[in-house]
Image (tube, rainbow, N blue to C red; front, top):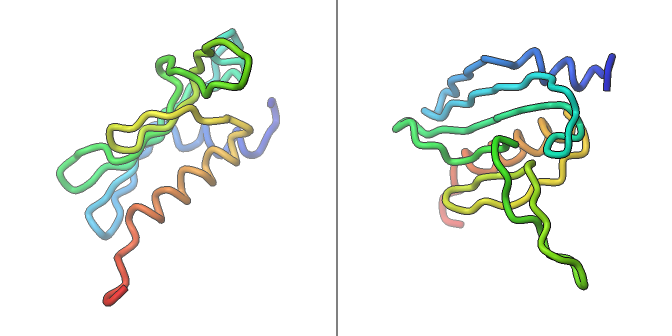
Length: 119
């Protein structure tokens, strides 16, 4: 992934906190590590969305293992890339730094959108 503009964009966000006008805020952490069994793509990350009470509403990270999706005729699989949405933790299929950012921002937009009156 060296010389990957998506990786450079993700890494440039490390340590950034963005306060959104509606009371929500996001925090980014991302750095390169030696690829290993838990982090085969070589990127450690934590992307989070918080509300005005500092409660985490959404998080994408690979800080700990979670139970992977079961596939037919396969045993249990533990994965490190995952998504937190409230109390729900589910595996996240990391494809690339760009896809990670796109997925995160799409969820942020969905969670922070003002409901349309009467709908």
